Image (cartoon, rainbow, N blue to C red; front, side, top):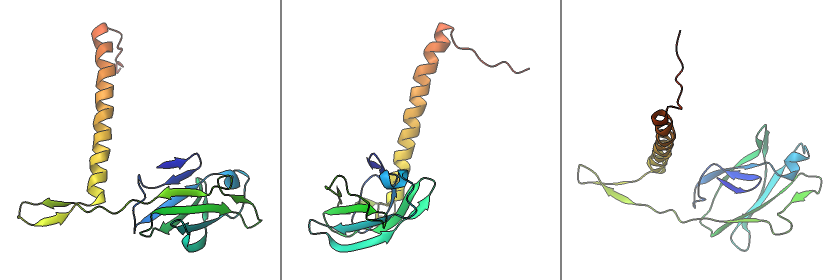
Length: 154
């Protein structure tokens, strides 16, 4: 999930009481800072204020953070040399969604929790189906018009 131009999360939504991996490729990464820290807190008052050193990778600086049940996740970045990336003084502030638990009836007339993995798989399959439909829609007109060339194996 790309939230801003240079900040990415490993999930589509920020959900309370989960661990999120954040990747940062902003100005501190682009200016070849050796070390970047994420300064973060939760809610309007920046509760549970913390600093964490981020791991430098080829893809940017990365860190895993445990979200709380607050309404927002607030953060900014610094490199230890008093250089900050704080969204031009506005900080980076993103909403945290409540963890919604759905109950589903199973074959044994018992109830079980729908897991995020199951929802993620259905999302991936819907993407695959859309891609297949797109390919069919673009290839069939070429075949019908005679503009489609197949590779001839020798």
